[in-house]
Amino acid sequence: MRLSAVLPESAIVVGLDGMDKWGVIERLTDLLVASKQAQPAWRDPILKGLTEREKQSSTGMQDGFAIPHSRMDEPIQSTLVSLAILARGMDFDAIDGQPTRTLVCLVTPRKQSREHLRVLAGIAQLFARAEFRSALLEAKTPAEVLAVIRAEEEQIPA
Image (cartoon, rainbow, N blue to C red; front, top):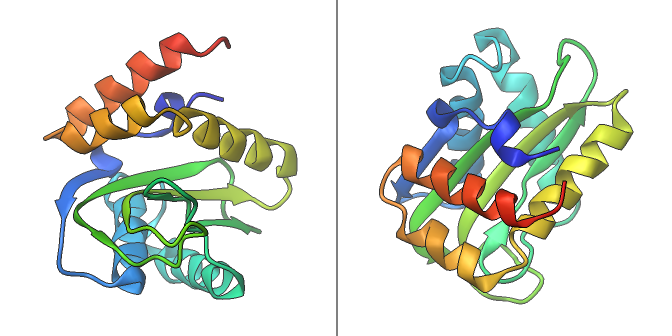
């Protein structure tokens, strides 16, 4: 599944600053509600799921990106995605020890394990190229972020 197919422009924030790891996860959760992917009543259970998952082991990958993610039972029926690009790198306990600048938040229904893994794999494949990661960091608006993602996805065989 392509990230651009499940990531609405209204769920993207560029230039986020002044937060710690937990504040960023909270902001990513709020974007899920603000973009109408999640009901306001789902906010706290989503945040709890993401926080608990992050406490188990960091979702900070390498090369400056992280994928905070969670699988949930009802009422989640479809994949929920938000994205933040930070103004400055922050410590996200990444496996390579480097600062994190780009975060993709992913929440999927627990019953859709295959979809969860497909989306995670797709995100990891997108972020594999340094040119893509650099282009994302240069994007100034959510629309530009989506354009960068779509352009990269065009280079990857479906």
